[in-house]
Length: 152
Length: 152
DNA sequence: TGCGATTATATCGTGCACGATTGAAATGGT
DNA sequence: ACCATTTCAATCGTGCACGATATAATCGCA
Image (cartoon, rainbow over all chains, first blue to last red; front, top):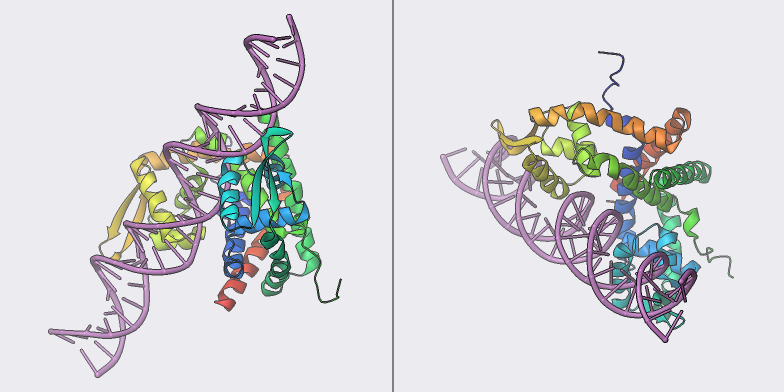
């Protein structure tokens, strides 16, 4: 094989495939735990972000979660339909929609708190290993985002 | 706050959120590179799996990629419509459908080979760091899968 | 040989995820 | 004061991703 031809990539060598698979595994594991709260996985992540910072705009929440408004708006409408959040135009700038937790949405925080610990216990990953993987992924994600904006 | 109440989880502490975000970042970065091949990201991963092992069954490919047949069948039909694969029932066991690469599908491997290296170069992640993150994710995914089958 | 159990794939319905596009609001320059 | 540009969220169309279910094929036992 000519030296200029790279060897065919193996799926197992792909960092992106490892991320892809781990993402699906998390989803599958979270699902039954979140079913009890009546939330899907992306809805749960959105709620966690809102428990941290109530009253943010759709744009702020999008940046926080790394999601486009085309994904967020339908998701937030479903949360609104479940009476977990309220969506209102900001009177100061009507282009912006602010997302506020309802009493029901706030009340969900307490039972939701147990979910990550429950999952961590089930997975058997120690906190040290957990922190190392997360730090590596955060660095990876930052590098990928930089690469994306350089090429843009 | 009572000692029995865990503190509210912060999104940044979530390993699952780091995986979720990194997955989206990979998708965004791959997309323009894969557009040139006419493939989506999941289609690309399926093709990589098939370049490694042609003629596998849908079930084998599903296990390989960690995907259900409800996801794979429509994806493979799209690849078939693009004349990249052929789908045929196995004559020895007609429950099984075998996926074979077409000449056009095989020919796509060479230009596709450059994609991961191109992306690695753009991301600035070194091979040592890359390998460490991937090994950690593989261990994580295995742990999550074990947790899933224990609870099932 | 027949039938119940199991296996493999496919379909259906629903929830994301994003690029392209649209509509409305705000901003800044002339 | 007006208008072009920019900003923000929403809509549209398409491609996944999965649980539930259906259909067809195979297997093993009586």
